[in-house]
Length: 490
Image (cartoon, rainbow, N blue to C red; front, side, top):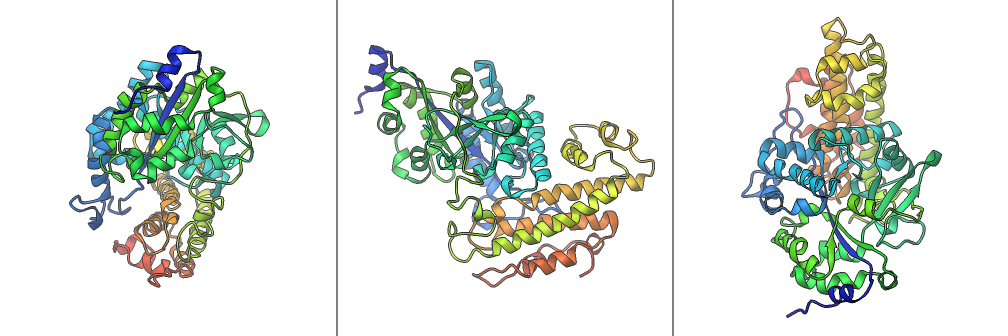
């Protein structure tokens, strides 16, 4: 039997500082819907469930929501997952959203963070696309939680200074990063100020790498919540800070799907840890913004940029490829180039056509999500963005503008990070990115009659699976057949 000693007894008999435990769950699924039909294809690997969204909901999202785990942890709920849950499992969705409201009532701050909308690797995006991803993520968050987001989760914690500066300009005050993303020594038990441009700054929390890695990858670490609290957590506290009576935070950051999906029954581990295990052994369960208000950062840190939490080579894993994935990853650079070339062509057409009817095409794109999702009326959107404060009198012109905005929407989807994460081109994730790009091509074709497909297929021909020999162009041609009028003739 484990004795309840160390932290409890020390706190009772001295002025030792309070120790806090924060668990952050990154809850995210990429969009699985086929972009022409909006239906999720059957995924045999999810059997007996029809797809992985359903499987992970049953194993993770539902049990954690109903157990109240979201009330106690820090979390982000990716927009594409939130949208699906809202439609498919509204009870689970409402319970997760309510967790932030419960935390707000209890502590005066929420515990949910926003997420850059499409899980795009932001350091690889253009400044304009970075801003759209941030603004879409913040807009989605505000709609769901009825408040402004103060924290934002960056896909793969991929970061550069420009990204952080844009976040700060948009009102975001803190992010979560890996400890190896710093260029200067840091103490991960406290947050740091990151200096930005023009006197701006943002706060960074650095998660505890050994604890986060142990929870993620070592089955024994999460066998027993009491043992974890009594034996694992104390080893990562800074003794001198305890003696000096200084507060310190142990931050464990993981994929949220770990708790019940990747690791069966770990939802129950999480429940016991936050309710009993951690408190019984002297740790106060806390969330990031609450901690930041109680103990604001006082020290500065410099970052190693660009960098991410799952690539030792900066961000090469999602760009030119590197040995972070097995085998030949050279396909990543050619796929990214094909998508980038398509985006440049699409951007040029979008701006050239819509600038006659929109005051600022790119500001309109940043606001398009709320129009698309019905969060603002067409009249309000056109009053704000129409060149003359209204929708074009010619309805066909207005329709073309909306088609081009929708093309931009799917163009953003085509850069979803999952398409570049794994080891081979011939997988569902790259195929999905190509499918989103094809949808953008279709919308541009319907709006303007301009063929972007031919050059895209030529570019995709250069990207090839080392495992099966399939090219990106093959993957595109294997996508579900659509009506001839929706795509240029091959």
